Length: 509
Ligand SMILES: CC(=O)N[C@H]1[C@@H](OP(=O)(O)OP(=O)(O)OC[C@H]2O[C@@H](n3ccc(=O)[nH]c3=O)[C@H](O)[C@@H]2O)O[C@H](CO)[C@@H](O)[C@@H]1O[C@H](C)C(=O)N[C@@H](C)C(=O)N[C@H](CCC(=O)O)C(=O)O
Ligand SMILES: Nc1ncnc2c1ncn2[C@@H]1O[C@H](COP(=O)(O)OP(=O)(O)OP(=O)(O)O)[C@@H](O)[C@H]1O
Image (cartoon, rainbow, N blue to C red):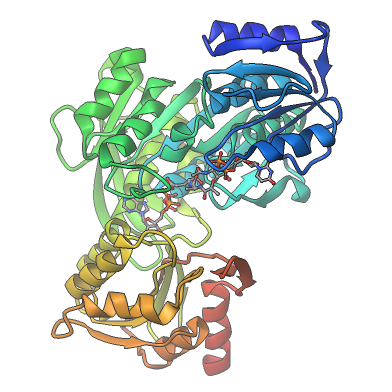
Protein backbone atom coordinates (compact mmCIF):
# COMPACT_ATOMS: atom_id res chain seq x y z
CA UNK A 1 0.00 0.00 0.00
CA UNK A 2 1.27 3.47 -0.73
CA UNK A 3 0.33 7.08 -1.33
CA UNK A 4 1.80 9.26 -4.04
CA UNK A 5 2.21 12.81 -2.77
CA UNK A 6 0.90 14.20 -6.06
CA UNK A 7 -2.35 12.29 -5.60
CA UNK A 8 -2.62 13.37 -1.97
CA UNK A 9 -2.35 17.03 -2.96
CA UNK A 10 -4.92 16.60 -5.72
CA UNK A 11 -7.42 14.93 -3.38
CA UNK A 12 -6.99 17.61 -0.71
CA UNK A 13 -7.44 20.34 -3.34
CA UNK A 14 -10.58 18.68 -4.72
CA UNK A 15 -12.07 18.73 -1.24
CA UNK A 16 -10.93 22.28 -0.59
CA UNK A 17 -8.89 21.15 2.41
CA UNK A 18 -5.37 22.19 1.42
CA UNK A 19 -4.05 25.42 2.98
CA UNK A 20 -0.39 25.11 1.97
CA UNK A 21 2.18 22.54 1.04
CA UNK A 22 5.91 22.33 1.56
CA UNK A 23 7.23 19.43 -0.50
CA UNK A 24 10.89 18.79 -1.36
CA UNK A 25 10.27 15.89 -3.77
CA UNK A 26 7.16 15.91 -6.00
CA UNK A 27 7.69 12.22 -6.78
CA UNK A 28 7.57 11.21 -3.13
CA UNK A 29 5.66 7.98 -2.48
CA UNK A 30 4.84 7.12 1.12
CA UNK A 31 4.59 3.52 2.24
CA UNK A 32 3.47 3.92 5.85
CA UNK A 33 0.50 5.82 7.33
CA UNK A 34 0.00 6.67 11.01
CA UNK A 35 -1.44 9.01 13.61
CA UNK A 36 0.44 7.41 16.50
CA UNK A 37 3.93 8.86 17.02
CA UNK A 38 5.06 5.84 19.02
CA UNK A 39 5.17 3.62 15.92
CA UNK A 40 8.05 3.17 13.48
CA UNK A 41 7.33 5.80 10.80
CA UNK A 42 9.89 4.87 8.12
CA UNK A 43 8.91 6.51 4.79
CA UNK A 44 5.65 7.43 6.42
CA UNK A 45 2.95 10.08 6.41
CA UNK A 46 1.92 11.21 9.90
CA UNK A 47 -1.32 12.95 10.87
CA UNK A 48 -1.38 15.46 13.71
CA UNK A 49 -5.01 15.19 14.82
CA UNK A 50 -7.19 15.06 17.90
CA UNK A 51 -8.09 17.20 20.86
CA UNK A 52 -5.15 16.04 22.92
CA UNK A 53 -2.45 16.29 20.23
CA UNK A 54 0.90 17.73 21.40
CA UNK A 55 3.79 19.11 19.30
CA UNK A 56 6.14 16.68 21.06
CA UNK A 57 4.29 13.77 19.40
CA UNK A 58 5.33 15.09 15.99
CA UNK A 59 8.95 15.39 17.14
CA UNK A 60 8.82 11.77 18.24
CA UNK A 61 7.31 10.77 14.88
CA UNK A 62 10.10 12.63 13.06
CA UNK A 63 12.68 10.81 15.20
CA UNK A 64 10.92 7.59 14.18
CA UNK A 65 11.41 8.30 10.45
CA UNK A 66 8.41 10.32 9.23
CA UNK A 67 8.88 11.85 5.74
CA UNK A 68 5.83 14.11 5.73
CA UNK A 69 3.21 15.29 8.16
CA UNK A 70 -0.36 16.54 7.71
CA UNK A 71 -1.58 19.06 10.23
CA UNK A 72 -3.83 22.05 10.81
CA UNK A 73 -0.79 24.08 11.95
CA UNK A 74 2.91 24.15 11.16
CA UNK A 75 4.53 22.45 14.14
CA UNK A 76 7.95 21.83 12.55
CA UNK A 77 9.97 22.71 9.44
CA UNK A 78 12.26 19.68 9.73
CA UNK A 79 10.29 17.53 7.22
CA UNK A 80 7.82 18.02 4.35
CA UNK A 81 4.30 18.99 5.34
CA UNK A 82 0.77 19.56 4.14
CA UNK A 83 -1.16 22.13 6.12
CA UNK A 84 -4.88 21.45 5.94
CA UNK A 85 -8.13 22.96 7.12
CA UNK A 86 -9.20 19.76 8.86
CA UNK A 87 -6.76 16.98 9.74
CA UNK A 88 -9.33 14.27 10.52
CA UNK A 89 -11.07 14.81 7.16
CA UNK A 90 -7.67 14.63 5.48
CA UNK A 91 -6.91 11.42 7.39
CA UNK A 92 -10.08 9.81 6.07
CA UNK A 93 -9.59 10.82 2.43
CA UNK A 94 -5.91 9.95 2.32
CA UNK A 95 -6.40 6.66 4.19
CA UNK A 96 -8.91 5.60 1.53
CA UNK A 97 -6.35 6.45 -1.15
CA UNK A 98 -3.47 4.79 0.75
CA UNK A 99 -5.38 1.53 1.05
CA UNK A 100 -6.39 1.59 -2.63
CA UNK A 101 -10.01 2.75 -2.15
CA UNK A 102 -11.33 -0.64 -0.97
CA UNK A 103 -14.79 0.89 -0.46
CA UNK A 104 -15.25 0.83 -4.24
CA UNK A 105 -15.10 -2.97 -4.21
CA UNK A 106 -17.61 -3.43 -1.41
CA UNK A 107 -21.40 -3.12 -1.18
CA UNK A 108 -21.70 -1.35 2.17
CA UNK A 109 -24.78 -1.29 4.39
CA UNK A 110 -24.60 0.89 7.51
CA UNK A 111 -26.98 1.30 10.44
CA UNK A 112 -27.23 4.12 12.91
CA UNK A 113 -29.57 4.62 15.86
CA UNK A 114 -29.32 5.28 19.56
CA UNK A 115 -30.31 1.64 20.08
CA UNK A 116 -30.34 -1.42 17.86
CA UNK A 117 -27.26 -0.84 15.67
CA UNK A 118 -25.45 -3.98 16.80
CA UNK A 119 -28.56 -6.16 16.77
CA UNK A 120 -29.65 -5.06 13.31
CA UNK A 121 -26.14 -5.42 11.92
CA UNK A 122 -25.91 -8.99 13.22
CA UNK A 123 -29.35 -9.81 11.78
CA UNK A 124 -28.31 -8.62 8.33
CA UNK A 125 -24.83 -10.13 8.56
CA UNK A 126 -26.32 -13.56 9.27
CA UNK A 127 -28.89 -13.26 6.47
CA UNK A 128 -26.25 -12.25 3.93
CA UNK A 129 -23.82 -14.92 5.09
CA UNK A 130 -26.38 -17.62 4.32
CA UNK A 131 -26.59 -16.35 0.75
CA UNK A 132 -22.94 -15.46 0.25
CA UNK A 133 -20.80 -17.60 2.59
CA UNK A 134 -17.26 -16.19 2.97
CA UNK A 135 -18.22 -12.94 1.24
CA UNK A 136 -19.65 -10.89 4.11
CA UNK A 137 -17.79 -8.64 6.55
CA UNK A 138 -19.04 -7.06 9.77
CA UNK A 139 -17.78 -3.98 11.62
CA UNK A 140 -19.76 -3.92 14.87
CA UNK A 141 -19.30 -2.77 18.44
CA UNK A 142 -18.74 -6.38 19.47
CA UNK A 143 -16.75 -8.02 16.67
CA UNK A 144 -14.98 -6.94 13.52
CA UNK A 145 -14.99 -9.68 10.90
CA UNK A 146 -12.76 -9.14 7.87
CA UNK A 147 -12.65 -12.65 6.41
CA UNK A 148 -13.72 -16.22 6.98
CA UNK A 149 -10.70 -17.52 8.93
CA UNK A 150 -10.83 -17.52 12.76
CA UNK A 151 -7.97 -15.00 12.78
CA UNK A 152 -10.09 -12.62 10.68
CA UNK A 153 -12.47 -12.06 13.60
CA UNK A 154 -11.45 -9.80 16.49
CA UNK A 155 -12.95 -7.64 19.24
CA UNK A 156 -13.71 -4.03 18.35
CA UNK A 157 -12.46 -1.11 20.37
CA UNK A 158 -14.90 1.40 18.91
CA UNK A 159 -18.36 1.06 17.33
CA UNK A 160 -17.02 2.73 14.18
CA UNK A 161 -13.24 2.59 13.87
CA UNK A 162 -11.01 5.58 13.19
CA UNK A 163 -10.90 6.22 9.43
CA UNK A 164 -7.40 4.82 8.99
CA UNK A 165 -8.37 1.51 10.63
CA UNK A 166 -11.67 1.57 8.77
CA UNK A 167 -10.05 1.67 5.34
CA UNK A 168 -7.27 -0.71 6.43
CA UNK A 169 -9.86 -3.28 7.51
CA UNK A 170 -11.93 -2.72 4.37
CA UNK A 171 -8.78 -3.51 2.39
CA UNK A 172 -8.37 -6.72 4.43
CA UNK A 173 -12.00 -7.57 3.61
CA UNK A 174 -11.48 -7.06 -0.12
CA UNK A 175 -8.24 -9.03 -0.11
CA UNK A 176 -10.07 -11.87 1.67
CA UNK A 177 -12.75 -12.01 -1.02
CA UNK A 178 -15.44 -10.12 0.87
CA UNK A 179 -17.98 -8.28 -1.27
CA UNK A 180 -20.63 -7.17 1.24
CA UNK A 181 -19.91 -5.21 4.39
CA UNK A 182 -22.39 -4.53 7.19
CA UNK A 183 -21.32 -1.88 9.67
CA UNK A 184 -22.48 0.32 12.50
CA UNK A 185 -22.04 4.05 12.21
CA UNK A 186 -22.08 5.94 15.49
CA UNK A 187 -22.79 9.65 15.80
CA UNK A 188 -19.18 10.04 16.98
CA UNK A 189 -18.03 8.61 13.66
CA UNK A 190 -19.50 11.64 11.92
CA UNK A 191 -18.47 14.04 14.68
CA UNK A 192 -14.85 12.88 14.35
CA UNK A 193 -14.92 12.48 10.53
CA UNK A 194 -14.19 8.74 10.72
CA UNK A 195 -16.42 8.07 7.69
CA UNK A 196 -15.76 11.37 5.90
CA UNK A 197 -16.01 11.03 2.12
CA UNK A 198 -17.68 7.62 2.27
CA UNK A 199 -20.96 6.95 0.46
CA UNK A 200 -22.98 3.98 1.70
CA UNK A 201 -25.02 1.80 -0.65
CA UNK A 202 -27.73 1.45 1.99
CA UNK A 203 -28.09 3.44 5.21
CA UNK A 204 -30.58 2.57 7.94
CA UNK A 205 -31.83 4.97 10.63
CA UNK A 206 -33.30 3.02 13.55
CA UNK A 207 -34.18 5.59 16.21
CA UNK A 208 -32.87 8.52 18.24
CA UNK A 209 -33.31 9.41 21.90
CA UNK A 210 -31.11 11.73 23.99
CA UNK A 211 -27.84 9.91 24.75
CA UNK A 212 -24.11 10.45 24.32
CA UNK A 213 -24.45 14.08 25.34
CA UNK A 214 -21.60 15.34 27.47
CA UNK A 215 -18.17 16.96 27.43
CA UNK A 216 -16.45 14.13 25.51
CA UNK A 217 -19.23 13.36 23.04
CA UNK A 218 -21.94 15.80 21.83
CA UNK A 219 -22.44 19.22 23.43
CA UNK A 220 -26.19 19.19 22.72
CA UNK A 221 -28.98 16.94 21.45
CA UNK A 222 -29.12 19.09 18.28
CA UNK A 223 -25.47 18.24 17.61
CA UNK A 224 -26.17 14.53 18.25
CA UNK A 225 -29.10 14.56 15.80
CA UNK A 226 -27.13 16.53 13.23
CA UNK A 227 -24.31 13.96 13.31
CA UNK A 228 -26.67 10.99 13.17
CA UNK A 229 -28.66 12.29 10.21
CA UNK A 230 -25.45 12.54 8.14
CA UNK A 231 -25.79 8.82 7.43
CA UNK A 232 -28.96 9.60 5.48
CA UNK A 233 -27.26 12.35 3.49
CA UNK A 234 -24.41 9.98 2.65
CA UNK A 235 -26.43 6.89 1.65
CA UNK A 236 -27.83 6.05 -1.78
CA UNK A 237 -30.76 4.04 -0.43
CA UNK A 238 -32.33 4.95 2.90
CA UNK A 239 -34.27 2.81 5.37
CA UNK A 240 -36.00 4.87 8.05
CA UNK A 241 -38.06 4.03 11.11
CA UNK A 242 -41.20 6.12 10.42
CA UNK A 243 -41.79 6.31 14.20
CA UNK A 244 -38.37 7.59 15.18
CA UNK A 245 -38.16 10.83 17.12
CA UNK A 246 -37.28 13.72 14.78
CA UNK A 247 -38.56 11.78 11.79
CA UNK A 248 -39.08 14.95 9.70
CA UNK A 249 -35.44 15.98 10.12
CA UNK A 250 -34.19 12.50 9.28
CA UNK A 251 -36.46 12.21 6.23
CA UNK A 252 -35.42 15.64 4.96
CA UNK A 253 -31.77 14.58 5.28
CA UNK A 254 -32.47 11.45 3.21
CA UNK A 255 -34.25 13.51 0.58
CA UNK A 256 -31.22 15.77 0.15
CA UNK A 257 -29.43 13.03 -1.79
CA UNK A 258 -31.98 10.30 -2.56
CA UNK A 259 -35.22 10.28 -4.52
CA UNK A 260 -38.40 9.24 -2.76
CA UNK A 261 -38.27 5.88 -4.57
CA UNK A 262 -35.04 5.10 -2.71
CA UNK A 263 -36.41 5.87 0.75
CA UNK A 264 -38.08 2.95 2.58
CA UNK A 265 -40.03 3.73 5.73
CA UNK A 266 -41.09 1.06 8.20
CA UNK A 267 -43.39 1.28 11.20
CA UNK A 268 -45.19 -0.82 13.74
CA UNK A 269 -48.99 -0.73 13.67
CA UNK A 270 -50.83 1.47 11.23
CA UNK A 271 -48.98 4.56 10.13
CA UNK A 272 -50.30 6.49 7.14
CA UNK A 273 -47.19 7.00 5.05
CA UNK A 274 -45.04 4.00 5.99
CA UNK A 275 -44.06 1.62 3.17
CA UNK A 276 -43.73 -1.45 5.39
CA UNK A 277 -45.77 -2.25 8.45
CA UNK A 278 -44.92 -4.82 11.06
CA UNK A 279 -47.42 -6.32 13.50
CA UNK A 280 -46.53 -8.41 16.54
CA UNK A 281 -48.46 -11.67 16.56
CA UNK A 282 -47.26 -13.58 19.59
CA UNK A 283 -44.17 -14.19 21.64
CA UNK A 284 -42.91 -16.78 24.07
CA UNK A 285 -39.66 -17.05 25.94
CA UNK A 286 -37.86 -18.54 22.94
CA UNK A 287 -38.97 -16.43 20.02
CA UNK A 288 -41.47 -13.89 18.76
CA UNK A 289 -43.68 -14.01 15.71
CA UNK A 290 -44.50 -11.01 13.61
CA UNK A 291 -45.87 -10.18 10.21
CA UNK A 292 -44.28 -7.80 7.78
CA UNK A 293 -46.59 -6.19 5.29
CA UNK A 294 -45.55 -4.30 2.19
CA UNK A 295 -47.79 -1.40 1.52
CA UNK A 296 -45.59 -0.46 -1.35
CA UNK A 297 -45.98 1.39 -4.51
CA UNK A 298 -44.53 -0.47 -7.52
CA UNK A 299 -41.31 1.48 -7.28
CA UNK A 300 -40.71 0.10 -3.80
CA UNK A 301 -41.91 -3.46 -4.36
CA UNK A 302 -39.10 -5.48 -2.81
CA UNK A 303 -40.98 -8.62 -1.87
CA UNK A 304 -42.82 -11.30 -3.77
CA UNK A 305 -45.98 -11.35 -1.67
CA UNK A 306 -47.77 -8.61 0.25
CA UNK A 307 -47.49 -10.20 3.67
CA UNK A 308 -44.80 -12.40 5.17
CA UNK A 309 -44.68 -13.96 8.63
CA UNK A 310 -41.40 -14.36 10.48
CA UNK A 311 -40.32 -16.02 13.70
CA UNK A 312 -37.51 -14.17 15.40
CA UNK A 313 -35.12 -16.05 17.67
CA UNK A 314 -34.58 -12.98 19.80
CA UNK A 315 -37.59 -11.80 21.79
CA UNK A 316 -38.46 -8.14 22.31
CA UNK A 317 -40.85 -6.02 20.25
CA UNK A 318 -37.94 -3.61 19.68
CA UNK A 319 -36.07 -6.47 18.02
CA UNK A 320 -38.95 -6.86 15.56
CA UNK A 321 -38.26 -3.27 14.51
CA UNK A 322 -34.57 -4.02 14.17
CA UNK A 323 -35.47 -7.08 12.11
CA UNK A 324 -37.68 -4.94 9.84
CA UNK A 325 -34.71 -2.74 8.94
CA UNK A 326 -32.57 -5.82 8.23
CA UNK A 327 -35.34 -7.43 6.16
CA UNK A 328 -35.71 -4.34 3.97
CA UNK A 329 -31.96 -4.13 3.38
CA UNK A 330 -31.77 -7.86 2.58
CA UNK A 331 -34.72 -7.75 0.22
CA UNK A 332 -33.34 -4.68 -1.47
CA UNK A 333 -30.16 -6.72 -2.02
CA UNK A 334 -32.18 -9.46 -3.67
CA UNK A 335 -32.02 -12.06 -0.88
CA UNK A 336 -34.74 -14.71 -1.06
CA UNK A 337 -37.42 -14.57 1.61
CA UNK A 338 -36.88 -18.18 2.72
CA UNK A 339 -33.28 -17.35 3.59
CA UNK A 340 -34.39 -14.35 5.62
CA UNK A 341 -36.98 -16.48 7.43
CA UNK A 342 -34.44 -19.19 8.30
CA UNK A 343 -31.87 -16.70 9.47
CA UNK A 344 -34.19 -14.70 11.72
CA UNK A 345 -35.57 -17.88 13.29
CA UNK A 346 -32.17 -18.74 14.70
CA UNK A 347 -30.95 -15.17 15.24
CA UNK A 348 -28.34 -14.77 17.95
CA UNK A 349 -26.55 -11.58 18.94
CA UNK A 350 -23.89 -11.83 21.66
CA UNK A 351 -25.21 -10.33 24.90
CA UNK A 352 -28.49 -9.12 23.38
CA UNK A 353 -31.61 -10.83 24.76
CA UNK A 354 -29.71 -14.06 25.32
CA UNK A 355 -32.01 -16.24 27.37
CA UNK A 356 -31.20 -19.11 29.70
CA UNK A 357 -33.93 -21.48 30.87
CA UNK A 358 -33.44 -22.82 34.39
CA UNK A 359 -34.97 -25.89 36.02
CA UNK A 360 -36.43 -24.11 39.03
CA UNK A 361 -35.10 -20.55 39.18
CA UNK A 362 -37.13 -18.78 36.51
CA UNK A 363 -35.94 -17.55 33.12
CA UNK A 364 -32.81 -15.47 32.78
CA UNK A 365 -32.24 -12.82 30.12
CA UNK A 366 -28.79 -11.33 29.55
CA UNK A 367 -29.17 -8.01 27.79
CA UNK A 368 -26.99 -5.03 26.98
CA UNK A 369 -29.69 -2.47 27.95
CA UNK A 370 -27.59 0.25 29.54
CA UNK A 371 -29.62 3.44 29.61
CA UNK A 372 -33.16 4.55 30.36
CA UNK A 373 -34.45 4.14 26.78
CA UNK A 374 -33.19 0.59 26.28
CA UNK A 375 -34.08 -0.59 29.80
CA UNK A 376 -37.54 0.95 29.44
CA UNK A 377 -38.03 -0.86 26.10
CA UNK A 378 -36.77 -4.11 27.63
CA UNK A 379 -38.64 -4.11 30.95
CA UNK A 380 -41.78 -2.67 29.31
CA UNK A 381 -41.77 -5.55 26.85
CA UNK A 382 -41.22 -8.18 29.55
CA UNK A 383 -43.95 -6.74 31.76
CA UNK A 384 -46.45 -6.73 28.89
CA UNK A 385 -45.56 -10.25 27.81
CA UNK A 386 -45.32 -11.82 31.25
CA UNK A 387 -47.81 -9.91 33.43
CA UNK A 388 -47.92 -12.69 36.03
CA UNK A 389 -44.15 -12.83 36.49
CA UNK A 390 -41.95 -10.91 38.89
CA UNK A 391 -39.39 -8.82 36.97
CA UNK A 392 -36.05 -8.98 38.79
CA UNK A 393 -33.01 -7.04 37.60
CA UNK A 394 -29.27 -7.11 38.33
CA UNK A 395 -27.73 -3.88 37.10
CA UNK A 396 -24.95 -1.35 37.63
CA UNK A 397 -23.90 1.85 35.92
CA UNK A 398 -20.42 2.72 34.65
CA UNK A 399 -18.04 5.20 36.24
CA UNK A 400 -16.54 8.28 34.58
CA UNK A 401 -19.26 8.57 31.94
CA UNK A 402 -23.00 8.66 31.26
CA UNK A 403 -23.81 9.94 34.75
CA UNK A 404 -27.44 10.58 33.69
CA UNK A 405 -27.86 6.83 33.23
CA UNK A 406 -27.90 6.45 37.02
CA UNK A 407 -31.05 8.53 37.40
CA UNK A 408 -32.47 6.78 34.33
CA UNK A 409 -32.00 3.37 35.93
CA UNK A 410 -33.59 4.57 39.18
CA UNK A 411 -36.62 5.81 37.22
CA UNK A 412 -37.08 2.70 35.10
CA UNK A 413 -36.54 0.29 38.01
CA UNK A 414 -39.09 2.21 40.06
CA UNK A 415 -41.57 2.16 37.18
CA UNK A 416 -41.19 -1.40 35.94
CA UNK A 417 -39.17 -3.75 38.20
CA UNK A 418 -40.32 -5.74 41.22
CA UNK A 419 -36.88 -6.34 42.67
CA UNK A 420 -33.35 -5.22 41.75
CA UNK A 421 -29.82 -5.87 42.94
CA UNK A 422 -27.47 -2.95 42.24
CA UNK A 423 -23.93 -3.99 41.46
CA UNK A 424 -20.66 -3.09 39.74
CA UNK A 425 -20.37 -2.29 36.01
CA UNK A 426 -17.13 -0.80 34.66
CA UNK A 427 -16.53 1.54 37.64
CA UNK A 428 -13.46 3.15 36.06
CA UNK A 429 -11.95 5.57 38.55
CA UNK A 430 -15.14 5.89 40.60
CA UNK A 431 -16.13 3.92 43.68
CA UNK A 432 -18.83 1.43 42.60
CA UNK A 433 -20.52 1.76 45.99
CA UNK A 434 -21.01 5.49 45.34
CA UNK A 435 -22.50 4.78 41.91
CA UNK A 436 -24.95 2.26 43.38
CA UNK A 437 -25.86 4.71 46.12
CA UNK A 438 -26.59 7.41 43.53
CA UNK A 439 -29.01 5.04 41.79
CA UNK A 440 -30.50 3.91 45.09
CA UNK A 441 -31.04 7.49 46.32
CA UNK A 442 -33.37 8.23 43.39
CA UNK A 443 -35.42 5.04 43.69
CA UNK A 444 -38.92 5.04 45.18
CA UNK A 445 -38.53 2.18 47.65
CA UNK A 446 -42.29 1.92 48.08
CA UNK A 447 -42.49 0.62 44.53
CA UNK A 448 -39.45 -1.61 44.13
CA UNK A 449 -37.35 -3.65 46.52
CA UNK A 450 -33.61 -2.93 46.25
CA UNK A 451 -30.42 -4.55 47.54
CA UNK A 452 -26.78 -3.66 46.75
CA UNK A 453 -24.15 -6.40 46.29
CA UNK A 454 -20.99 -4.95 44.78
CA UNK A 455 -19.39 -8.22 43.67
CA UNK A 456 -21.18 -8.81 40.36
CA UNK A 457 -20.82 -12.60 40.46
CA UNK A 458 -22.26 -12.65 43.99
CA UNK A 459 -25.10 -10.36 42.92
CA UNK A 460 -26.03 -12.75 40.12
CA UNK A 461 -25.76 -15.78 42.43
CA UNK A 462 -27.95 -14.13 45.05
CA UNK A 463 -30.55 -13.21 42.43
CA UNK A 464 -30.69 -16.68 40.91
CA UNK A 465 -30.78 -18.45 44.29
CA UNK A 466 -33.62 -16.27 45.51
CA UNK A 467 -35.74 -16.76 42.38
CA UNK A 468 -38.29 -19.43 41.58
CA UNK A 469 -40.08 -20.65 38.50
CA UNK A 470 -42.19 -17.98 36.83
CA UNK A 471 -39.72 -15.22 37.74
CA UNK A 472 -37.99 -13.28 34.98
CA UNK A 473 -34.39 -12.36 35.83
CA UNK A 474 -32.66 -9.68 33.77
CA UNK A 475 -28.86 -9.43 33.94
CA UNK A 476 -28.59 -5.99 32.43
CA UNK A 477 -26.15 -3.58 30.87
CA UNK A 478 -23.04 -5.65 30.48
CA UNK A 479 -24.10 -7.99 27.68
CA UNK A 480 -21.30 -10.45 27.09
CA UNK A 481 -18.44 -8.09 28.06
CA UNK A 482 -15.60 -10.21 29.40
CA UNK A 483 -14.03 -7.47 31.51
CA UNK A 484 -14.71 -4.84 34.17
CA UNK A 485 -13.07 -1.53 33.30
CA UNK A 486 -11.48 -0.62 36.64
CA UNK A 487 -9.00 2.23 37.26
CA UNK A 488 -7.77 2.20 33.65
CA UNK A 489 -7.41 -1.59 33.48
CA UNK A 490 -9.69 -4.12 31.75
CA UNK A 491 -9.95 -6.56 34.64
CA UNK A 492 -11.00 -9.98 33.24
CA UNK A 493 -14.58 -10.99 34.09
CA UNK A 494 -16.08 -14.21 32.72
CA UNK A 495 -19.18 -12.38 31.30
CA UNK A 496 -22.76 -12.52 32.59
CA UNK A 497 -23.89 -15.54 30.52
CA UNK A 498 -20.87 -17.57 31.66
CA UNK A 499 -21.33 -16.58 35.32
CA UNK A 500 -25.06 -17.39 35.24
CA UNK A 501 -24.52 -20.80 33.61
CA UNK A 502 -21.78 -21.70 36.12
CA UNK A 503 -24.05 -20.79 39.04
CA UNK A 504 -26.88 -22.86 37.57
CA UNK A 505 -24.54 -25.80 37.19
CA UNK A 506 -23.54 -25.45 40.86
CA UNK A 507 -27.09 -25.27 42.16
CA UNK A 508 -29.10 -27.30 39.63
CA UNK A 509 -26.46 -29.67 38.36
C1 LIG B 1 -13.80 11.59 21.65
C2 LIG B 1 -13.34 10.66 20.60
O1 LIG B 1 -14.08 10.25 19.73
N1 LIG B 1 -12.04 10.35 20.67
C3 LIG B 1 -11.47 9.44 19.68
C4 LIG B 1 -10.42 10.13 18.85
O2 LIG B 1 -9.50 10.70 19.64
P1 LIG B 1 -8.76 12.06 19.15
O3 LIG B 1 -8.66 12.12 17.67
O4 LIG B 1 -9.45 13.21 19.81
O5 LIG B 1 -7.37 11.76 19.67
P2 LIG B 1 -6.86 12.01 21.16
O6 LIG B 1 -7.28 10.88 22.02
O7 LIG B 1 -7.20 13.38 21.55
O8 LIG B 1 -5.28 11.90 20.92
C5 LIG B 1 -4.58 12.83 20.06
C6 LIG B 1 -3.72 12.17 19.07
O9 LIG B 1 -2.40 12.06 19.59
C7 LIG B 1 -1.84 10.84 19.21
N2 LIG B 1 -0.78 10.48 20.17
C8 LIG B 1 -1.06 10.35 21.48
C9 LIG B 1 -0.03 10.02 22.38
C10 LIG B 1 1.27 9.81 21.89
O10 LIG B 1 2.23 9.52 22.62
N3 LIG B 1 1.50 9.96 20.57
C11 LIG B 1 0.51 10.28 19.68
O11 LIG B 1 0.75 10.38 18.48
C12 LIG B 1 -3.01 9.89 19.22
O12 LIG B 1 -2.74 8.75 18.43
C13 LIG B 1 -4.12 10.79 18.64
O13 LIG B 1 -4.12 10.73 17.22
O14 LIG B 1 -9.80 9.23 17.96
C14 LIG B 1 -9.23 8.09 18.60
C15 LIG B 1 -8.73 7.16 17.49
O15 LIG B 1 -7.93 7.88 16.62
C16 LIG B 1 -10.29 7.32 19.38
O16 LIG B 1 -9.72 6.23 20.02
C17 LIG B 1 -10.95 8.24 20.39
O17 LIG B 1 -12.08 7.53 20.92
C18 LIG B 1 -12.20 7.53 22.33
C19 LIG B 1 -11.24 6.52 22.96
C20 LIG B 1 -13.64 7.10 22.67
O18 LIG B 1 -13.90 6.43 23.64
N4 LIG B 1 -14.59 7.51 21.91
C21 LIG B 1 -16.00 7.20 22.15
C22 LIG B 1 -16.72 8.40 22.73
C23 LIG B 1 -16.67 6.84 20.82
O19 LIG B 1 -16.21 7.20 19.76
N5 LIG B 1 -17.77 6.12 20.90
C24 LIG B 1 -18.55 5.75 19.72
C25 LIG B 1 -19.81 5.01 20.16
C26 LIG B 1 -20.79 5.93 20.81
C27 LIG B 1 -22.16 5.57 20.33
O20 LIG B 1 -22.64 4.45 20.59
O21 LIG B 1 -22.77 6.42 19.64
C28 LIG B 1 -17.79 4.77 18.83
O22 LIG B 1 -17.92 4.89 17.58
O23 LIG B 1 -17.15 3.86 19.37
N1 LIG C 1 -34.71 -0.68 18.43
C1 LIG C 1 -34.51 -0.62 19.75
N2 LIG C 1 -35.18 0.28 20.53
C2 LIG C 1 -34.97 0.34 21.86
N3 LIG C 1 -34.12 -0.46 22.54
C3 LIG C 1 -33.43 -1.37 21.82
C4 LIG C 1 -33.58 -1.49 20.39
N4 LIG C 1 -32.76 -2.46 19.97
C5 LIG C 1 -32.10 -2.91 21.03
N5 LIG C 1 -32.50 -2.28 22.16
C6 LIG C 1 -31.98 -2.42 23.52
O1 LIG C 1 -30.69 -1.77 23.53
C7 LIG C 1 -29.67 -2.70 23.89
C8 LIG C 1 -28.46 -2.46 23.00
O2 LIG C 1 -28.80 -2.92 21.70
P1 LIG C 1 -27.73 -2.87 20.54
O3 LIG C 1 -26.42 -3.28 21.09
O4 LIG C 1 -28.27 -3.56 19.36
O5 LIG C 1 -27.74 -1.29 20.26
P2 LIG C 1 -26.55 -0.32 19.86
O6 LIG C 1 -27.19 0.78 19.08
O7 LIG C 1 -25.51 -1.07 19.16
O8 LIG C 1 -26.10 0.16 21.29
P3 LIG C 1 -24.80 0.97 21.79
O9 LIG C 1 -24.65 2.18 20.95
O10 LIG C 1 -25.15 1.27 23.19
O11 LIG C 1 -23.64 0.01 21.65
C9 LIG C 1 -30.28 -4.07 23.71
O12 LIG C 1 -29.64 -4.96 24.58
C10 LIG C 1 -31.73 -3.85 24.00
O13 LIG C 1 -31.98 -3.87 25.38
